[in-house]
Image: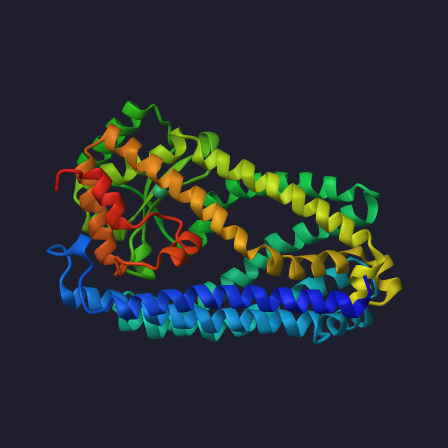
Length: 419
Ligand SMILES: [Zn+2]
């Protein structure tokens, strides 16, 4: 592939991917503007017109920010790949540290900063303008900065050993390094599943055992009935950052934990909490988590094979202005280039994973309705829907690609066919 043809293809891919993202967001914006005047039929009598207006306005502001954010990300990719910034940063890293492991770390860090620094004002706008305006934000500026610094420190502590290992593998493991690289990636991901809930999440939030004895007893009965063993039942201070509510499971095997946000504990009744947990248990019992993980590993094997081919191809790094001896002596440079190029070709695949995720949500709802009272899950979903100010109506094509959960109205209708 000649350099100019490669740049043309990558440039078109960046534009096509951006065009697709903006097209979807614009469709949803248009749809919500059209449907702002009246409460969607499925929610009439459950949501007031005022609540509906607030939900639509909140969604519109986030969508407009998302359009800007997509454009920003694409502009940065274009600047790095087509504008020559990546080749410039590579030369700089080599000038500072030679062609060894330190240069690889410097280059990786520089590329991450190129994306992360412009994201700071976007995240600040989202938190302190949009979330604040609609009454969801509880993050203080000090907490925002502390979170950012902790995130950056973690990226160094966890990311640097990972990059060093991959750099070593790509230098020493021969032609099939990508297979070894994939194996390492899988092992590293599994290790993270053990480490993150125990050691990383407590850096950001406080986890306390749930002290409400009646609720504990209720949940333990549910766990026993479903044949589920958890190593703990925790309350997380989610209200520290936001009033949005959530519940989730972390870890795997014997380290599984159940975590409920304090925001959920205060807004849902005990029987609603039990129904929400039964839904989450359904994801475990029906092996959704394992299936998702195995799919992820299979997809990453394909990605590693493609990367293995591109790193070995002389034309690839050269097309982006990387000198031949750099590509030869520092294969990590080509590998980082792959990580920058590939997302522009794979954005549409999110539609497939969201479609699968929605199937899993239906299955987990059905499981919850078997194990607990479906009406409790329905009323919990309606409360969460209102608490999160979701608009309750959506453009079907936008929803197909972007929503990991089915529309709340449809879920409630399936759980409560009578009402
Ligand atoms: Zn779910």
